[in-house]
Amino acid sequence: MRILLVDDSATMRKIQRRLLTEMGYSDILEANNGKEAMKVLSDFNYEVNLVLCDMNMPEMNGIETLVAIRAITKTIPVVMCTSVAEKSAVMEAIKNGANNYLVKPFAQDAFVAKVKPFLG
Image (cartoon, rainbow, N blue to C red; front, side, top):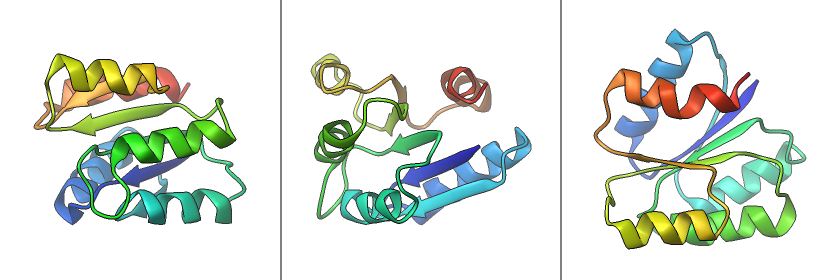
């Protein structure tokens, strides 16, 4: 299972990496923003099993990243992990192809509940 963490916060990526490692996953890629994420996805021929993506990032925000991913593939699950909790933001993400939405800060059990279904 290959997982891509997309967040401009190195601390948040570290937290997500730790949680995923505790869940037994070790093939974890990282990107600092959406532009980097698209390069990483391309470098790995879009052979990624899950993308966890922040909403507010420089260069290319989460919705722009989601739209770019969905323009290429509909098969990679994308879970938005963000501090943006407004219903309109959640609906925009879902409308653009997000598979789920997790509001930061999150508890470990909430994280597991949101990502585990996409990891088999």
